[in-house]
Amino acid sequence: MEPDSGREILGQADDLADLRLLHLADSALPIGALAHSFGLESLTSCEMLTTLDLADFLQTYLEEAGMMDAVFCSEAFRLSAASASENDFAARWLALNNLLSARKPARESRVGSASLGGNFLQVVRNLADFRLAGVALDTSKRSASLVHHSTAFGLACGLLGFAEDRVVLVYLHQSVASLMSSCQRLLPLGQSEAARILWNLKPAVIDAANRSAACALDDACCFMPLLDWGAMEHPALSTRLFIS
Image 1: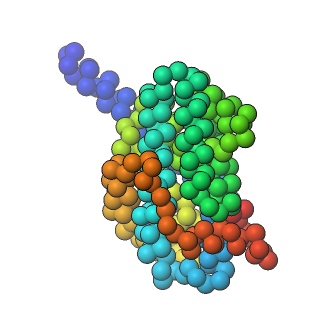
Image 2: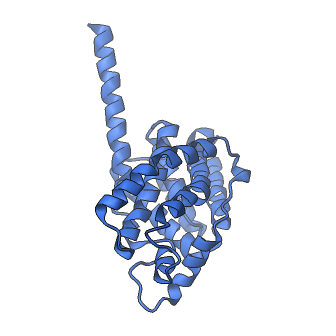
Image 3: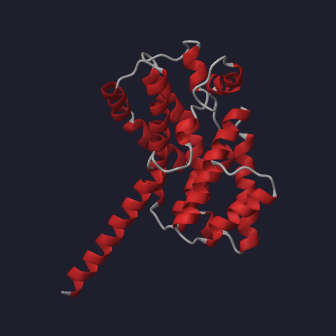
């Protein structure tokens, strides 16, 4: 009976990890994701993004911005294990987030990412007693540094002991699903069509995750000027549904 009992316990642990990962990626998690379009509102308002080209746009997003964020998500995932001490962790954490900030030229995108990241890490801190999550938040606050969503997600999932490859896949999927949710409020896009587009994007999610795994941190970059322009133009809109 012992081998069967061991497999049963291991299976229960895997099931619990999967459920917790789904919880952290749920759109209902109270981090404010529904308030951000990251420039999509500007693009739809001037008809530079329509339902006809939405699938191609989101695939390009995964190839560029998504892949870059996935690299930083993985780096943050490994951060707690790679740090020799709490001070070393704090220094690495600040450097990682500052590096990602430098790769987000639009202020609105940086601030939006930081809003989600800070809220996410605070939620995780309230759900489970992880000392390093508190260290990360407190260090960033003292240094007036941003906490990005991708790094916060990676760090929290690393502390929880999830599988890194699954973490990156889930992060990318929830990112593009969040953008799809924004588009459903901005475009004449029904639930069935949105579900179809998101279903067909899953191979692109896997491809972005695989590419991020082979990309060094210094090589991670994003060239998507249309998205940056949309984010920068957002404050000038006469009416706005989203913060960014």
